Image (cartoon, rainbow, N blue to C red; front, side, top):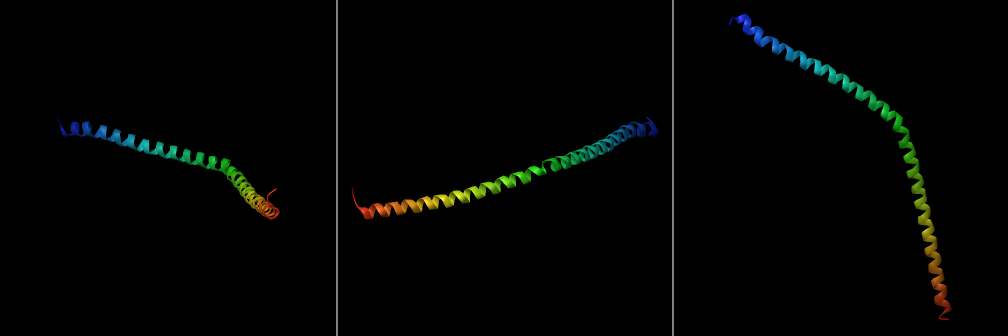
Length: 91
């Protein structure tokens, strides 16, 4: 086997492997770019939900504060009724 045949025998498969690696790198770069654009569209489409959920969370916080105030008022009334019952004595 001559030197030229040896170089062709080892060079052609090596060159084909390098071409395949470069092709895959280019394709992966394109796929990555498509996923980035899809991610951008997804974020822009669903960013309005963040505001809605924040509004709902604020409403629940206000509701919780109102319920806490109501519970404290009911507790105060219950304490007053208990004191009035104690002052009136047994029936």
